Length: 439
Image (cartoon, one colour):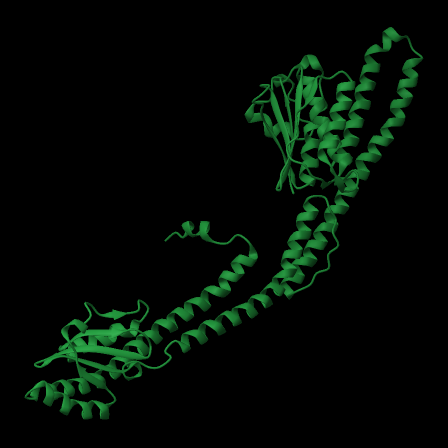
């Protein structure tokens, strides 16, 4: 049997699920006990007490039926009713209500009426206006007899006390248990918050605490974070060292070529320029995600500066009106590099580009649209891999990249806990690249 349909009704947060696990058994137990209590107390006890009263009522009605007249019936019934704790008198037909009366939540009244119908069929009307008095009307040969007595004769007094106690103490114990449970879950939520911050490139201080299992998970996270940071540092140092070491022989080669005939060395100089550009891209890729420290940044101002630089360089880049406002904790150097790569690609493979920034309560979105040939849908994932060059799908007349621009942007977006999405532009018809970062 599949319970997949229950997933949409289940809480998503850890607190919500823990509260459900805590509250559901308590509520179920109280419902079961309440049903048993109602069945036993309201039905069993009330039925027994009403049977006793019905026997006394039958006696009064028999005495009234054996009397010769209404006057004799009153004389014989009054002392007997007084001795049994009843008030009895003959009533006019107009005094008889049109129907029985009881409050909608008076469940014991249902049992009283059922027992009286079985044992004293002469009772034509039963009035249960409150928890103190009972009034009934019974048919006799001398006319309708009105009988009044205390409600405690047919049902137990204060039957709601057990339910009230169950409810009060159930709520009290649930609150106490929830406070304790929240204290136990706090280390788990703190670990999740630190892990999420690390996924966005932020290094928050963390000291494992809580239960043994939570401490073990916290220590494992710290070890993992240290290994990842060490690996990133080693990769950056290695690539930076290689790029730096290669600059010296390239510089010597450029100096040697400058001493030769320019006509003979034109091709070699282009190769040297290409190698230097490759080294710059390698160094950018090595720095990429870890470049700079996180700080509160206004993304709109950052993008506006980038667009202004592109326009001054002669590129046809338009900044659309921003949506929303706010400051986010980002690595401005890395974000500037990622958006700069997207803008460079857009003007390299297209004639013009449009940039838009949208800030909401949940996310930041930086979108770049161009009017170039775009990237086929089946090759978009490949385009985000390092050293991927999709020149056949792009405009080669604009020059060829190294294949690290989109890879750097993807790495930077991931380091901020976001993603780089590639699609087709609805406005310009070319490539749409957008960086989406959750807040």
